[in-house]
Amino acid sequence: MPTSEEIHKRRTAAVARGVGSVISSYVDHAGGGTLTDVDGREWIDFASGIAVTSVGNSAPRVVEAVREQVARFTHTCFMVAPYESYVAVAETLNALTPGGFDKRTALFNSGAEAVENAVKIARHATGRPAIVVFDHAYHGRTNLTMAMTAKNMPYKHRFGPFAGEIYRVPMSYPFRDGGLSGAEAAARALDQVDKQVGAANVAAVIAEPIQGEGGFVVPADGFLPALAAWCRDAGALFVADEIQTGFCRTGSWFACEWEGAVSGAAARAHVADPRRGHARREEWAPDLVTIAKGIAGGLPLGGVTGRAEIMDAVHPGGLGGTYGGNPLACAAALAAIETMRELDLAAAARRIESVTMPRLRALAERDPRIGDVRGRGAMLAVEIVAPGTIIPDAATAGAVSAACHRSGLLTLTCGTYGNVLRFLPPLVIGDTTLARALEILDGAFDTTT
Ligand code: PLZ
Image (cartoon, rainbow, N blue to C red; front, top):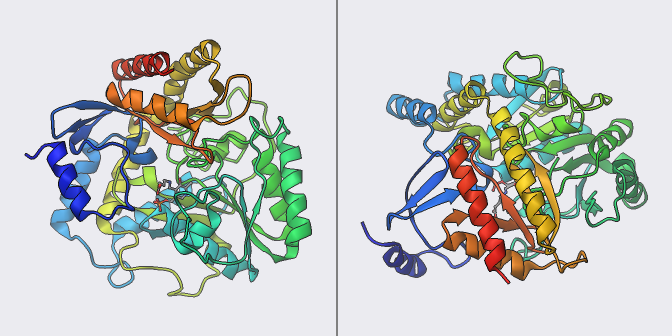
């Protein structure tokens, strides 16, 4: 087996420079909460391939299901010769996603493709053009989704012109908006929509319930339901982009359940209601949900699930793609979801939060460079600033992350200002591995000046 250094040399000569990697070690195998590189070095995985391998790498049920499927048939194209596992994934998503109403699902390959299709469906169903997105949003790298993504570097720089009829409005970002309430932040955003776009032109408002790439921004309580209520009155659709937050990552099947969205799964005995202990709020649900990442244990699968009458508004043949809902990905998804149920990974995510949050808060107490600690479940972050201010300090965030890497902890940064250090462990991470990771993180802050 060649060393990482050797592979890296070949990579530089073979792989386009525009495709980056966080570390320059090359993976040999991975499982549970760790990756092992070709040089035999073990890394604790606080990235999960960007919130994908929630059930762990090569999770046993996933491996078994894919192995069985790959031997049976690899691909027929669902649009040509359909198969049961696609239907089973759709049934499962219809039951699990928020909202007690009748739903339909269409499957694709990636998150960006799911978002693209949600926009197609929303425009078709409403007959309206405008799509409203938020500051700090991330929705993908295709032309339409680049237009929806907020950050220029590295995602959009010199890749335009971008798709039209995308309108960006302010987000609820408690650490940076002076602490507006959810209702106030929603009113600020929606006033801009009313004045600049016109409610009657809006097909959909699309939001990440907790922003991912934009900095793990948790909107103030009440923000999402206020957006959804405005959409209902305006005849527009509310779309929750749960690509990063879905599938137990935040301690519930979907993150908008924390904001009072009625859980499609709550009625099912296996799943605890995450709103237990919270004041009961008015229930609501997104009209459409976009899904990818964690759903299939590492195989590429994306989807849109939503109200039956909206999804079914599109003419037969209007949605699809060669690989969408590929049989290997569907087999993996069914196995991954079964694993989430069997191991109660929503509870595991809440447990990760209950162990990690106090440690991050203690770290913030003694290190004034940590301006904010936030997130839910196993989607947690610290925002690094010049002490006593909200001035972003990307250099320190990068340096702490690099110190983690030197000690064998794979962390990622994110945020519009690049100053957020984020933690996305697989939900199956063991207690000792998690404790070791938190020690490394403490040490990384202490040794970074
Ligand atoms: N919507 C909320 O988080 C993907 C992107 C990494 P794809 N986030 C990771 C990178 O630098 O490309 C994401 C997301 C949300 C949509 C997407 C897009 O999902 O599967 O990467 O297309």
